[in-house]
View 1: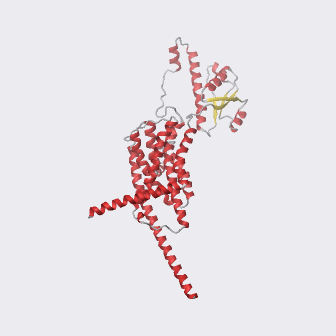
View 2 (view 1 turned 90 degrees about the horizontal axis):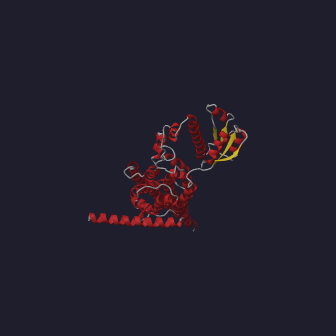
View 3 (view 1 turned 120 degrees about the vertical axis):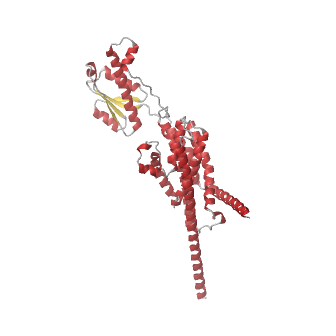
Amino acid sequence: MKNESLLQRIIEGIQDACYIWREEMRQTVRDEGVLIFFIIVPLVYPLLYSWIYNNEVVREVPVVVVDDSHSAMSRRFARQCDASPDVQIKCYASDLDEAQLLVSKQVVKAIYYIPSDFQTRLNRGQQTTVSVYCDMSLMLAYKAAYQTAVLVTQAMNSSIQTQLSGSYTRREEQITAQPLDYADVPIFNPTMGYGNFIIPGVLMLILQQTLVLGIGLSAGTARESNRYQDLVPITKHYHGMFRIVIGKSMCYLMIYAVMAAYLTMVVPRLFGFTSIFQWRDLLGLMVPYLLACVFFGISVSCMVRYRENVMLLVVFVSVPLLFLSGVSWPQSSIPGFWQGISWLFPSTFGVRGFVRMNSMGATLHDVVVEYRALWVQAAVYFFLACAVYRYQIIQSRRHALERLEYLKHRRAARKRKEEGQE
């Protein structure tokens, strides 16, 4: 009898969870706002973001030259800078004031200033300088302008050393110009581009943020409708907190299993970004990540009273979460307090694990810390979501009973009034 009762409860729990899943799926399909965040935004936004950064690096940064030397060496310096792929000599200015005016109008991004004694000092065997003034508002443009000037001066230094060395063979000239040779081999980001650097982390953050937005929007809609209507009676399908959370999470997981495969496997390949993970390792990471995001979104939805609130909340924390993940800013340089705050969000461990798999070829064993942390978050937020729904149902029952008692008193008072009039 005990086994039959347990089996019956399990079957009833599965049926109730399926019922809640069906109702949640129906509400999701009917709500245009939820569909936008669940379907349209994850499909379109990664394409737009990847397309913007598809060039990877900044090319042909406009630069103005102030050439007070008017010599062959100064013209050589400007010519070699203009021949580089990163810099374009936009124009020449007569003095620094005119050049600064061009920078303030955003006609150019940097200034190359060549002093009047540039070639004279070189001919005397003395050291000379080239000043580089950069607009620091855009770091990629600053990097291109400054790095190009450094590389050109290094090439000119090597040429001058070779001429003064008196070497007889090409090999002697090479040793004189560069006695210590080096090989520059970029790893994990062979294109040295911004897209390969930032897009993987953004894709994982999009999964969390759109999921939280959709769940919060759905919760806000439910509360707004209950505010204007009589509270829905608590049916037998809402007797178990686990059934509610499992039924709702089944709906969200079905949708985001497809979205996660699209964002992690399709989008990077469409734009040629680095993608060297193994699908088994990725699947092992995505399962706890999606579970943690779903239960986190359900827990956060308790704070959403109106539909608009969740959009303000999620948009506000999106950029800080990207910084706290350790992708755009070194994790070791983040203060301990903020690192502790970042552990509350699934995106922190999801972004770190996916970036290492996607860009560095890490296996699931290599990201075991992030993997375990995601499972811990999934478990904690699952029980927190159950507690949230239990609290909400208790509150709903209390309000329903108060409403019922109020209606009874009102009906009794009206009846007494009618009897008195008679």
